[in-house]
Figure (tube, rainbow, N blue to C red):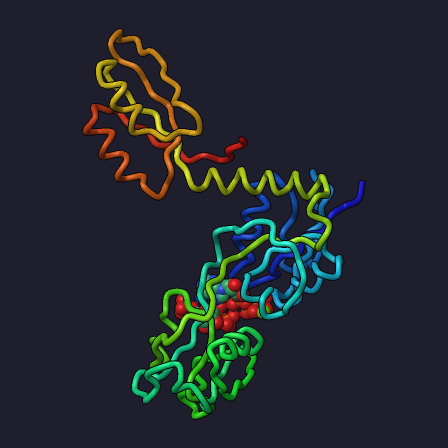
Length: 283
Ligand SMILES: Nc1ncnc2c1ncn2[C@@H]1O[C@H](COP(=O)(O)OP(=O)(O)OP(=O)(O)O)[C@@H](O)[C@H]1O
Ligand SMILES: O=P(O)(O)OC[C@H]1O[C@H](OP(=O)(O)OP(=O)(O)O)[C@H](O)[C@@H]1O
Ligand SMILES: [Mg+2]
């Protein structure tokens, strides 16, 4: 059986979460900082540790079958790859930002202005679509300091908390794209059985992360009211308790509306609510 290769970032913002995701999928591998390739002992897979900029092309060319990388990098490198799964980490936005005190009020004010960025392709396409002609200055990092040094009038860079913009006297001006880490594959390889198996595992981990396992006790009289509040994977399990008119209800609740749901359950008569993390949900 052919051994697959998956490319992940060697170090940087996506490294830790990518390793964690693969380990949570039950894959056993060593993660030495010095090794650039690591075999998985219990799945026909090798992990390549690369600079994130190189991942899309490795996958496009089939050197790696799969990759985990930010959408921003895929768009910038303009590769042809198959998007398999959004992974829910590495969330950020590519934004144009301008100095706090400046005369840029509308997008049209960017005409003729210099914009520093490490994303010239994405920015170029965005400006063209908006009918703006700016002078795009491509630099390879520390973009936020360039207006302060007089190198540009604005910047286009990734933002998540906004802290870096703030500490450099800049403010967000326009959203160019939003991004998160995604699993990509070489075109045409999506239907490979091993890739499908890996996608199933990743999805079961992602699904589990979004939910909590909840066990609660309720009097039989209040059971219907409690069940009406539960989404569950299917219908909840109801287990009799030693005390005849009480039952325990086992269910799964989405993380996002968790606290609202819990307070509604308490109002409906739920008691002794126990909440547990879930490792995997296999549908
Ligand atoms: N502030 C942020 N918050 C969340 N995600 C981010 C942030 N900045 C970047 N990212 C995402 O993480 C990816 C990797 O960012 P990082 O800064 O580690 O890249 P890099 O310096 O280019 O790394 P490499 O050494 O691999 O080239 C980005 O391409 C983006 O998708
Ligand atoms: O909005 P914030 O939360 O402040 O994040 C934004 C910063 O994060 C990224 O850089 P990173 O810290 O990854 O450093 P790098 O560009 O040197 O890789 C990005 O290039 C911004 O500079
Ligand atoms: Mg990079």
